Length: 346
Image 1 (cartoon, rainbow, N blue to C red):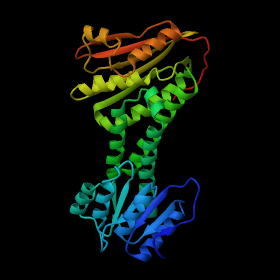
Image 2 (cartoon, helix red, strand yellow; image 1 turned 60 degrees about the vertical axis):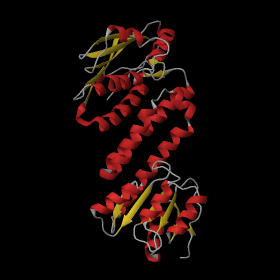
Image 3 (cartoon, rainbow, N blue to C red; image 1 turned 135 degrees about the vertical axis):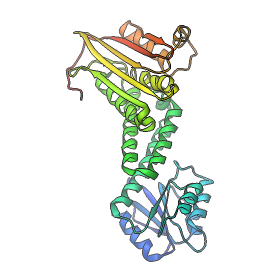
Image 4 (cartoon, helix red, strand yellow; image 1 turned 90 degrees about the horizontal axis):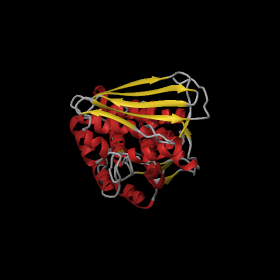
């Protein structure tokens, strides 16, 4: 194999750069990745690697740790001068991992480190996870307008990406699970804003479940989630009416309470055409003055004023907020709906 080696073009496949001074190892890696399939660029030195990085659009770099001209650490640090851990993930592979190697790898900016010999399934799983993370970040970047319209908190975005990066070091399957939930969250949020002014409770619930699954991973035992939802219920409502309420409850309620707490989502059918949705928490709570302030112009609490305006327009009702400092908050809305569909909610 002469380097740099370029595999045949595979439409839609991610591009992976592999770097190893051992030609036999390089061939094995290339065959393995092309079989997934990925498009592969293979080089045998750090210098060649940096030349490829400077002129190619890559989705992942796989670096052998020990090379004669530049170590994997050196190459990784050079890559990080131009690309963040999200923009271009790096996986370092080595014959033996010691604690110092782990420290050096992550200090150099590697996303993950893997010991040889490795199982094919674990190797591919780690690669897929890192590429999924990069694709998810690109999706958010490329849809900036939808991102803004959807009122997704940028701190939430970066917190999730950092969570995925951290999990990639500890629990690959959990990292892939969180990435899948995050992808669903983004896709559903963007679809709502870009396709219709009207959504359904069923679709909104999908967003909420994905969001809470991600937050549960971040908060662990500090967050308890409770659902009280009628089994056969669905109704029309404007998009992104419930998820921002849940986000606020976690961010401003549970997140500010030492030891965490619980959040509860209730959805009930009151009459044939009237539904009640309530988001409660036992978090920090608010003073009466703060309750009045949060729906006023210019207040930055995620989406609440926007939700209240759309609720007025769509249903002729308003958000009802009840809160007590150090006890918790309940935000409820009444949806008047003349078109409904019965489905099973699990």
